[in-house]
Image 1 (spheres, rainbow, N blue to C red):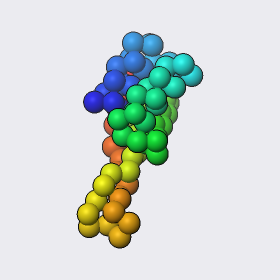
Image 2 (image 1 turned 90 degrees about the horizontal axis):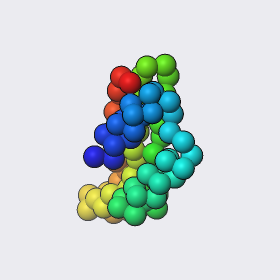
Image 3 (image 1 turned 60 degrees about the horizontal axis):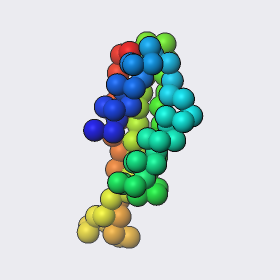
Image 4 (image 1 turned 45 degrees about the vertical axis):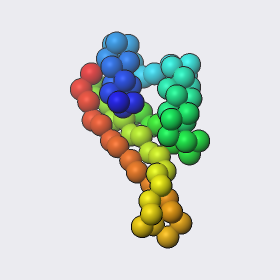
Length: 77
C-alpha cells in the first residue's frame, strides 16, 4: 500500500521525485505504522522509479525475535 502510494505521487508529479515535504509526510506515516526503523528509498531515473520499503518485523524463529523485511516496486512513470 505504501509503495503504491509513492508510485501514484510520482506519477501525479509528472515523474519528478518527491518533494522533501511529501517524503517526510510519507516517512512519518510509515514509521507510525511499521516502526521507527522503517525506511523509504525512492530512486527516479528518467521514466522509471524504484521504490523500496524496509522494516523490522517480529519473527519468533529469528535469534533476536526480529527479522528485516523489504518490498521493492519498479514502476514506469
